[in-house]
Length: 214
Length: 193
Image (cartoon, rainbow over all chains, first blue to last red):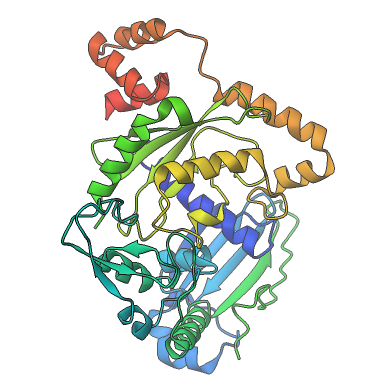
């Protein structure tokens, strides 16, 4: 029983992955890991991957016995990281810029002010401080600063705070690069289990954008 | 670190309005990080009459990160995996906001039961059926509700007796059943944990 939630969690991630990438027939069932030592020869790979990372490269193999499909994903640093990648998708609004967070006005809570901070659900305490967003929603300074540092929108009405263009862009680039590096290459193979010999469509080409190395 | 005081407050708040909302939250083990939610199937839908259990895991970053929710009751719905119970709902992903609570999230899941979005499916097979053969979809969804989401016909006394026969003290069996809303399997799980 104890392992069940984990298994279903993984299968949920796979389902999302299948959906996001429109591979409706491919629901991987068994996955195995093998490390760089077993890397096959004769497949071209981008030079930078080859040089820098061959020592720690891993390979993830997903097999679906129903469609008799198999995918080999090279360059994933760990299965967990890969799953996290697939699960991540769009990340919501990027963090608000530091200046815009710092610029939010602070107020003292007066005696008789009613209400609560919807982030921590603590009621206002007279004498305490609140920060007010441009949309007039108020929160504890710590609570709202933490949230805006993750997503730059009002928790209540989704009013959008200015985001730091520079960091936002850099973050995107880093993300993209890391993904590309991690998923160095996918090899799709389809084979048959019945003794009629092997059909091997080793295309060395990924069906997704992730691995289109520039 | 999970904000347990917030989770605790949410449990109390939700408990106050079980009659009104029909939404229940129970602690699964001895930690507030694992909960079980239950929602009644919306009236006028193929899910009517069913009680749907949802496994909830509170991540470390809660409430800055969404709770993880997954149906443990099998359900036939385009946005819920018929295999794993995974839910495709934006507020449980990138549209999460800390102003939402476990209760409002469960209410959103309940609303999702009323209004499927087959164009953004979690379960492609169900979504295809929904779009191409709506009558069959309704039939299947209703059948699944009857089969998986209805409490067994045993009364609470029968269940207590059954658990007592398994060797659990009667009082303990009763309070376990009470805590999980009468579901004998969940009660058993609780007694064993």
